[in-house]
Image (cartoon, rainbow, N blue to C red; front, side):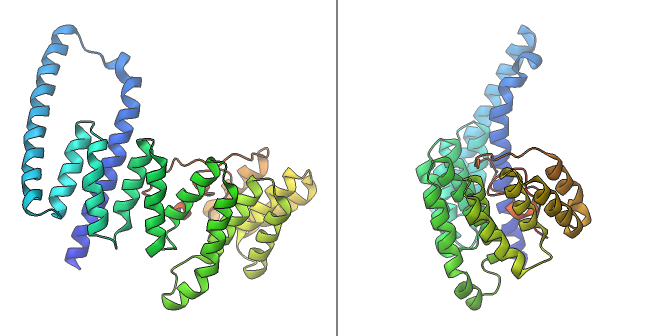
Length: 299
């Protein structure tokens, strides 16, 4: 148990390190004009930065020496990723992340970070391949599934996204018999309806949402989605009735979000793959497949 806890701390460290490094790269240009020091201070800062970089490079050499002896040393790999990110060497984190992902296949977080790193390097093909590797062994991993669906839709491949979801649904019952709760079938079914909805395939979307409502009449998520379809079809009275029903069904923490959606104009936004791969898509109250923002959280 202690070993597992220690490993989880390391995994969380990688997720935080990579996320912060990407944020630093994107935010830095915005702060440049505000935080530019005076020339003398700038020279001092440059010297300090050079010294700090030299220290980091020495530390990197130390971790690389450890990895020559122990190629799968988890601490050294995580340390190397951290230090290379500090130097802005995002590409240099790929190989140690690959090693971590392959050495610890039961910890999909490493491969999720690897996939996200590929995306930040504009290598979508490699990112998709990493998501598929996760789904091969863990077909119910919603972050990988959500991210891959988003990529397919972004690439104008909605049929590929739909096929991916349908294949997941086909294997759900068998997978859940072998190991309960491997695949959250209702959530995946809802994802299918959402892809249909955002492709304006309203009849198929309603069929998917109606099936969910039939199976669980207290689940407010498909009711909200169905209301959005009705609104998109111009059937505002039906939409309002469904929104009101969803607000009644929704837990207290989601009622405001349901009401916000009910009061908003119809928005059929494309899916965007901008999550940080460190958060389960179900844990946001406004999640549709990867970062759409007009659907409430499943209870």
